[in-house]
Image (cartoon, rainbow, N blue to C red; front, top):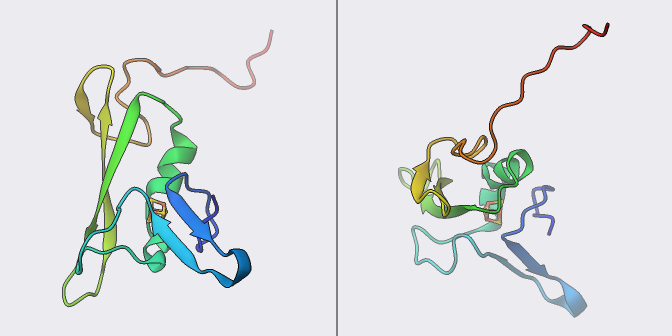
Amino acid sequence: MRTPAGKECTYFFGDYYRGRNIEKCNLIGDEKPPRSWKADLCKTCPVPGILLANGCDKMTLAGEVKPGILGIGRKVNVTAYCTKVHSQVENPYIGCGHCHGSVAFTIGDER
Ligand code: SF4
């Protein structure tokens, strides 16, 4: 579903039917302040970019709101875990590298 920030995110839920205005993030859930979710966090959240870059179904994401100082600089912190090799994923944009190795190719060398 498209977030209020205009990016596709599978964790976002919005219900605007018949005047409703229900929005929630299923990655963060119902945390208490100062770690509660608000839609403005979607603007800087890395999750839509991660989902676009890496579609591995073995990688799971976990997220929490980092409160910042006096509420300034609130952001979503994301960690990734590979359920196949059972380890943390250092770079969720790339993945752990176990299943999907890198592909090397050369452009402009057609003979
Ligand atoms: S905060 Fe991030 S994970 Fe949650 S709905 Fe917004 S973009 Fe998706």
